[in-house]
Image 1 (cartoon, rainbow, N blue to C red):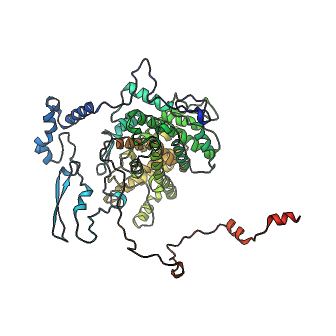
Image 2: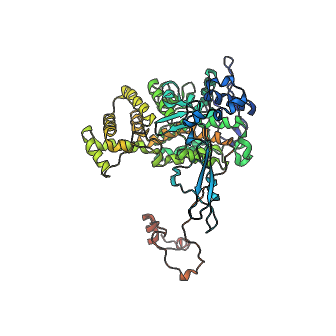
Length: 565
């Protein structure tokens, strides 16, 4: 890839890597420069007040700053109705306090309810009742009702089936926007204007090539390696570049500059599809085509997959658009498992490549990123529409598992599922219809008519149709999670960037509820009892180990000296 002229393509050898790179893309004479630097804090505060004022009351532009700041407090009618002036439901019912009575001691405690509709968990540390003298902890396995951060990036109303990126409904973005345009909004708060979008897209594509040593590292991996393992290896390899922008080497303040932040962002987003193309062809034994920076993001990805044998090949633009919509829909989903992992890692001050790699590692888990593959296997097992009633009865009787239905957050229809169903029909019209789609549509209809699933609020989620789209596009099931990771990197980066300026951020260090042995003293090995089977290490020796253990030993040098053998 050294022949591709991009900002991040280097010739082999450590001395040829540039010591510094431009933080902003090149300027065009016909367009305003694209500079991702936020306004100074004063201007930002004024803009925030004005934006909030417009949301609170259309008359806000006629009010002075003091009136804007106290508008909600002056209008108790809106607060009593449970909404603010813009019609948004007040989170958690609004600010106030809870009076907690400890029935163990009879003491009363006032616990504040913050305006965001949350209770500070540390407030419960004041509730003590003797014993070890420690205050109460909040036990929440799986973080079912724990918010580790405040965020402005995405909003979900699971009961109403709402997903918004920076306030924009996901349905509108899928119909009118592109992945990179929506990525800009997720990262920087607003959709870009025409000049910003052009410069943003150009900058991303200029950073799409991989450094030669990273390519060499990927080529050293096994041909049958899982594609997600290859993505992880690539991200970790990238973390070793640019030591001048590594906080472990330069100090934690290196990311305080917006230009340095943005440089890492465009590098990672630009290189994700190239890493994915190498992961794809590591399994095929072929070499991906060099990135074509004249193409759009998803179009270039398909080009790298298919143009290795024909450099004049161009992807079908409608298929590229379908994949772009899939990327847009998967770009962000607030505090899911992998995004929480990214936030957790970022809180330590680690470099952003390692934080994103850790998040991708969490996505690698089949409970997070592998559900769409399970849906395909389920539909294939059902086999035909006539078998659906029996399958649903099996689900009710706990004899079958239904994948692609239900969600930790959504208690209504996942808004992304409707869009993906339409994308599937578009793709099938170009490459041929997958017979499993008819089974999927009928299964959805039957489940939505069945009181068992309706009462339990089990509706199709994003995974129900996405696997069908990916399979129709020619991707093997083991590659589906990679297609999830490519766009979700934007969400990870948006949360990383937001966390850098969050005054509430602290290094994450959750509590635990200890239930082990309280105290015991070290015994001599001669008086110990054998460890129980459930705690003893159990590593079965391989056949090769047994072969070696079955052999004897010999003095090789003496044997050779005597002329034997």
